[in-house]
Image (cartoon, rainbow, N blue to C red):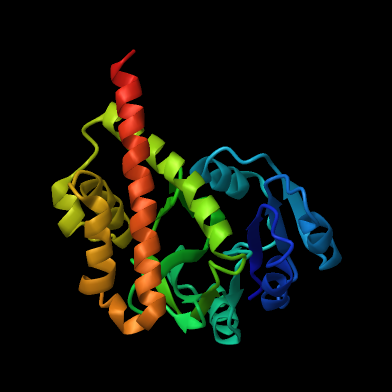
Length: 275
């Protein structure tokens, strides 16, 4: 069964060619671009992709707009970032699942993140992401690091999606996560303004993985010494030390990212109380 491909981009001239090569089996590839200023669009068009441009506002709004407005050729869509690659096994699995999905409207995919030549097998928070779906049955929430919400049963695909988050270097990763931390702080403040949404029960007992992850994140925001706690969770509780030096470095970077969020949330709280 043919499957459409959705690639989100913003100045991805370095990573996009290999990404597109990994999904070249599809006859309907869409590059959803946030007004790149490099050669991203030219590369996409050279590879035969259909390009849709839209200025980025926040992750959930941007992704939801894409699913609602891009005209996909096929009923099933596989979403992939430019720094990710579909393995041949995953490509075959995705096509087979689209041909015979049963009652599922979406499928989780296991992602392998690589850093310093090492598969971060243990230190990652979660390796599973909803990437194959019926677009009319999928939506996203949160300003950054959005949660994927499928309107119906969810299955799981075999094979791996390979991710190279440091392909552009540490400086790029830090710059990107600095901007992410701004949106994370804004999301925390928005949650506090809305009030009443957080559920401790759902953080531990929600049957849906993504719903549980959302409430666990909100619980995490309320804990003291979050940067240190995040390091301990990733490096000790999840056994990130088994990933060697790459695991130690990655856990340290994630704790720094968490500290960015703490500082920016504190800044917004002070600014809000002074009004």
